[in-house]
Image 1 (cartoon, rainbow, N blue to C red):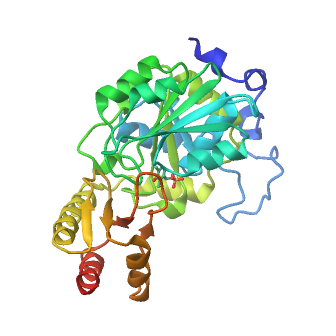
Image 2 (image 1 turned 90 degrees about the vertical axis):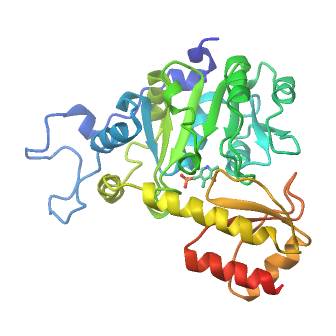
Image 3 (image 1 turned 180 degrees about the vertical axis):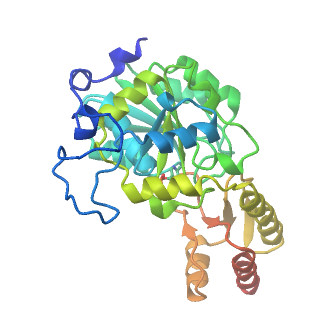
Length: 341
Ligand SMILES: *Cc1c(COP(=O)(O)O)cnc(C)c1O
């Protein structure tokens, strides 16, 4: 399998838009009359760096991955959409994803007119590798795995994921949005030697920057080149690039440790309540909790001003609520109310 052959022919043949900053790379000093910008300085009158060089250098340093293996997007959602546009021909190719999982894979597939084949996880939310391989055909170009998985919260088994990377004849995308909460290094280090692997991470969860919209894809130099070719040239604005660069200098280890401790406390408190039937083990910053009547408890919590996510209509999540771990005070309030139901 050659990765080049998986890329849509029109994408392979597209010359990327060449920005004014691509054609002149002589640095920041000069009289810039090349991009039709306003000459009056206000902090934002110049276009942002389309290649996000400084930001990639910072992310590279934190993640231990070379800048040429890093793509930065307007949230992971941009990376997901680009992968469809690069690898899947509308109306003929298909993609696979586990179920239950993150809803954006299907939305992006639908928007791109790509058939999405969802393969159920086992009852304990572990991967059914044979079922996945059985659903593939020569038009299967992408396989989305989410680990730790949303909404089930569990890390997928490493050996099973490796089996799929080795046996799926397309691109395996591992969404590691919650990896910072898991006691596991994930698949990041493998992107440089597994050419059909893309790892997605985000600053929206553990890093606390959901409002800034910054997602990352890590992959081979070739795949990153294709993603950079297809993205909007100025996809990350000046403000986001500068604030994120600054915020990445702070450590998240304390806040992550706090969330994990809080998660275990919430789980132990919920376990003793009569209306709680099961608490799934979590490697993320949320708990999937099976209750006796999810829509009812959901409404009762809302009446008290506490909003959780009702996931009870999702495959494999009957009567389940997904509860994000908040501050100490927020978690105490949740438990207090739950005790009274
Ligand atoms: C929250 C989440 C994301 C984050 O998406 P952004 O667009 O980066 O905010 C990605 N994948 C999963 C599975 C998530 O739950």
